[in-house]
Length: 306
Image (cartoon, rainbow, N blue to C red):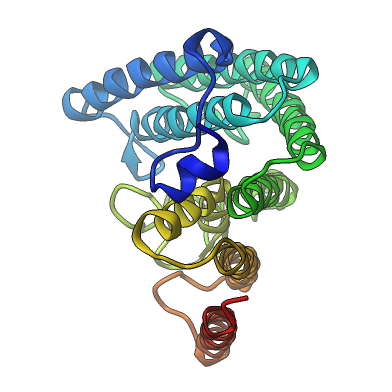
């Protein structure tokens, strides 16, 4: 079954045999799932609090994120029409970077201290200096996969748009982390999640996002998960609508474009030191404008049916 036939039928696009899946990314998926379970146990049974949240919350969130991230990349590589050695090797690089990142995060939790932006001792500074460049390596490894996906001809247009937009917007979300590392805090340290308030203040449950100031982790999170959200949009349109291929492709393109603008708006809101749930009139107007344009464009795409 071809990619276009399977997606139109409402199932996931045709995959290669299990032997053709990127094994390093599948190993990363499995290892991250195990770490997520271990971290959840830490949240339940370790009562230590760090920066205002359970100390094991950070490794839990990172582990869950890597589960979705690694599996989605493995899926994308598995449905590309042609196998790409350079993309497969990029998967190996991503595995190596993830191991470094997760190992440092867990090590610092065991030591009872933070991993990100921590330069309080020579050891902490060394570990943080390892994390920064490693994320840059991961970023460029995904760029390689995105370029490969862009160059290959994926027969199903909605799926092609979804995969390419998902990869591109997730790179945008990843790039927001570089803004975090460039912030100068009141204490003189370089690097912070929050804007206008110190890290570790009042925050939302589970996510830990600031409720008193801006938080760049919000747009970072939303951007990263475009990797899943946009392909799911294409899947939903194929599964639950009878739109023609051209209409679905236009809707995916419109939805992906709106998603990218949403990431930029959330970043803009955070940089103005504005909590997610306390937007001012200007922010609400911007979000409303995006929603209105998206609705009008989607309606036009559906009515065109050509």
